[in-house]
Image (cartoon, rainbow, N blue to C red; front, side):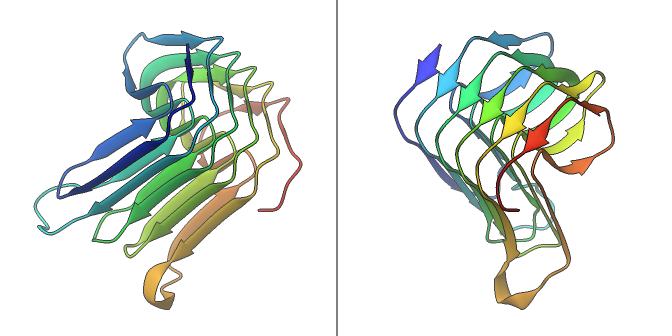
Length: 178
């Protein structure tokens, strides 16, 4: 599969997952030999503290749960913007991975997260990595940027491969500015 068309998502008071191939890869999904060459932009504004309005943006998948991405690449710029009370996640391949794995993938696009909240995560491959099997044999050559509105530098996490990591990263490299 491939995508060459721009992805633009802007909502209030709901979580949104935007990806070049899929918004959310949920449980036992495998994405293989796919690519994205267009920009992915996701923006949310939380207007009610009782809901979630987290933006997840990725070149291949906005959000991954118990799924696998292998032999894929991204060349589009990825942006995840939170104007409200929630966090923001962006990655060249996925905004967030919870379970599953990413292998043999690369990112060439720039990745940006910006938040008015407490946390922002940006990574060349994934914004955060809570995967079962980790990330392996991947690389990033896109610029990674994370920032906060109003000068609030709370918990801003940026990495050439992953913004926040609690799993294995094997045989990966970053060759660009973070």
